[in-house]
Every structure is written in structure tokens, then in C-alpha cells.
Length: 459
Length: 139
Image 1 (cartoon, rainbow over the protein chains, first blue to last red):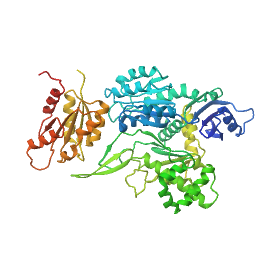
Image 2: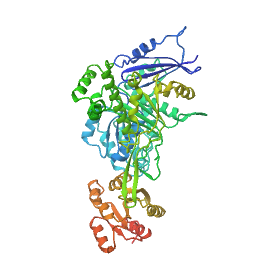
Image 3: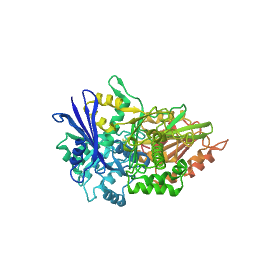
Image 4: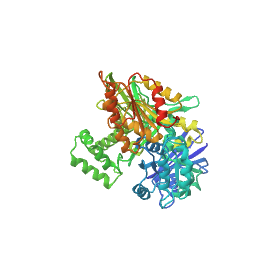
């Protein structure tokens, strides 16, 4: 037996997964409340204690962890034009597994700086200008940021011609300051890999310690990445396969949580029909979006605010019935539905959260009437032919009807301009192992791939 | 001398792609860095691209006769976004029907375009003009 310990320090729960590399099976999973306030190891040990120990105790060959505890990786991104470098910076941060608190464009103002001070990001990402393009704004912004009263880690991923100069300005106040390749080296070209690696490096060297997560490193080898990065990495492996073993192909992962709904797609998303023109920023093959207003519990109120009408239509309930039910969740976020009606409400919330989150993740198509007939313009990814949708997250796992919730992510003929998957097969991450498999990929990608194939089941 | 950057595109709901390719090729050959935003380009795309790339000029094509409508307000939007003095050229089949080109030209100059080209203009003409307007030639 070659046991590997994989830990996900979540915002609410610390989840422990033990796998055997030889037999490629899960030896045990357990969870316990995350104990960031005292010592993060307490929660981990409590979870570990729930898994029966073999005779002679555990002999782990590897001990790896990811974390979204202590608020996860919080970032603020800044670029020049909102739709161009600011958007590219936002996508780079999301792809690195961050929670993006704010995105600023054009010159930073005193008000923007105040917001940085209040929201206390872990890392700032500074972009602006294509290579050889605009220089003034990123330099001015570096100057502005150097007046902040606090020191913050900064990753610069803007116009390469002046990024060294911007770094010099920032180093007067901030540490560390890391220069990565431009997130938009040419107009309309998105290049987020270098920035992603730089963010991860800063996370490993600085953020873990700042959050008190380094206490775990005395026992573990290392906290390797933010949890969303681990999930993305697992998703990519599952789509691509390993060695001669083919993967599942292009896919989407929907993670329905209590506070947010995350959507990951591993897909090119090129137009599926002829004579469609692509517009807007090109999409990354590995794309992640996070919807902070679409959670089933902590942000259930925000969800109803966004989709109250849809919810009432689906349920046939009145306004009062909906708010009564919401109040119950406010008192006890982890309330288990007691009656058939409550269960129905729960399904409706999940379905609508998934629907909206996928709406915002996928691309859209619009018709432009030209003197030569109709032309089609696509913005974002066309995922209509996508064949695989995988559900994960606590809410789905502990739910009696995950399929009904996931179906919210299917193409709606009444909204034909939103390019959601038309006829996908649904799968469930039944053992909640995606993040753990992203970690395992670091040491044994083949086993990680095979285990996902085994433990992610068709619905 | 530092390479000059131009933003090239076909404005409005216009899908004529051939001339756009030819202009891209000709300006690139002439030593310009061409940021080609292609067909169906909006005014905002021209402006945003110019801001990010620090472009020296906007080259606007319109081939389908609705150019006057599509180009109106472009100079004002440039002014609003801080690139008010950027050089803007326009050319193609700018209007419908058989209109006198001089009057068309007057209208576009009044809209803030620096140069206006009639149908059938070869790329050499605007290339030469742009070199002169950017102070790249000595005379």
C-alpha cells in the first residue's frame, strides 16, 4: 500500500481524502470544521481521526494540501480599457484560482486606493497596455499604488516595455513585486499562463504564511495551490487524458456551493455553425467563472433578488412563501429540507443558480442584419455541442436530486442566443474528489486520471 | 525611427473583408504595425484598441454605403476618451447613390476626419499621406 493524504482546507470544512496509489482506490474520506482561528491542524486532525487507521498507523508516502480557507486567495486586478487589459487581468486572476474582489480600469483614483485598503487583497495584479502600446497608465498606476500605506504583493503583467520601470516604482513600497508576461501582448490576444504561474509562486512563498496556513506545513509537505486551481487542474486532466489513455473530451464542471457557484469549462468553444464570426476577447481553453451572488445558502437572498421571478414561476409560489423559506435558511444555513415543499424549493434554488451561472459562463450569439442578409456574431464560447457536464460541491452531493439541479445548465430554446450545452450527459463527483485529484496530479497524474474515471459517476 | 501603429477596421454592420486584408498587407509592407480589428467593428472597438496599443492613427473603411451614419460621433468619442488628436482617415463607398465626392468629402472633414478617400483609391495614397502627416518624410 502506498497511502497518499490529500487535504482541502475549505472556507467551512477541512476535507481529507486518503488514496492508495497501488490499487488506485479511495481508502477513506472525511470532513471536519476548518479551524483557522486557532490552529488549522486541529480541524485536519479531527477529520483524519474519523477514518479508521490501519494496524500500525498510517504511513503516508505523500501529504499534499490545497486551501481556500481564510477567505481564499483574494485579488484585485487593474488594467487600462475595461473590455481589454482589465478583462484579461480579471481572467488571469480567476484562472489562478483567485476570488476577484474588484477590477479597476484606466488611471487609479484615490477612491480606488481607499477600496484597496478596505478590501485587503492578498495580491494585486497590475496590467495595462499591449506590448509596445500605452505606457503612461501603468506607470501612473504604479506610482499611485506606491502611495498606499500598506505593503502588498504585486504581480505586474502589462506592457513589457515599461513593466521593469513599473516594478522599480512599486518596490519602494511593496514586496514582493513580480514581473510576468503581459496578459495581452497583442490586441485581442489573451496570454494568462505566465501571470497565473507568478500568482501561484507568490501564493506559495508569501500568502500561505500570511494566512497562518504555514502551521500545516510542519506536518504536511506543502500547501500547493488554492483549491479552485486544484479543481481546474483536475478538470483539465480529466478532459485530456493521460498518456495513451483518452480523456473524456471537452467538458464543463459546475460547483454549487453555499456562497458561490463556480463554473469551469475545458473547451475551445469555437463556433459550431458555419458563417459565424467571433468577436470580443478570445476565451481561454481552461476557463473559470465565479458567481458570488449565486449560492444556495449564504447568498440565497442575493440569488432570489437576481432570479426571484424565475423562482416563483418555477415553483408557482407567492412572494411571501419564498421569503418565509429564505428566513428559515437565514436562521440555519445548513438546514435540511423537512417537507416535500421545502425540498422543491431547494431544487428550484439550485436549478436557477446553475442556470444563471452557466448563462454567464458560456458565450452568446447575436444576429446582425447587413445589406447582404443576416450575419452572426459570437461572443465567448459556444458550448452547445459539449457532451459532458460534471456536478460537484457539497450542495449537490448531499442532495436527493442532483440531476434536476444540473439540468438548469442546459440550453434553453426560449433563450437561443445563450450557447449552453444542448444535450450533455451528466456526471456527479460522488466522493467529492476533484480538488484532491488536482493535487494528486502533481505527483501521479496517471493514478489521478484513472481514479477520476472510476469515481465520477454518470447520473 | 520608432515603428508607427495604426488601427485598421471596417466600421458598422459591414462585412467586406477583402479590402481590409489588402490594406493590412499594404500598410504592414510599408513598415507600419497594423492592429487589424477586422469587419463589423464598432467605434468603441477602434477607440479601445487605439488606447491599449497607443496607436498613431485610425484607418476606417466603409464599403456598404452607410458610412456617414456609422462614422458620426467618432471624433467626439475620441476626444472624450483622451485620444482627441489622433489622426483618422476614412475611405470606401461611404455613401449610397451617385453623390458628388467633393460634397461627401466636405461632410466627412466636418465630422473631424483628417483625410477622406473616394472609391478606387490605391493603398499607396493613404500610406504616403500618413507618412507625411506623422512627420515621417522630409519635405
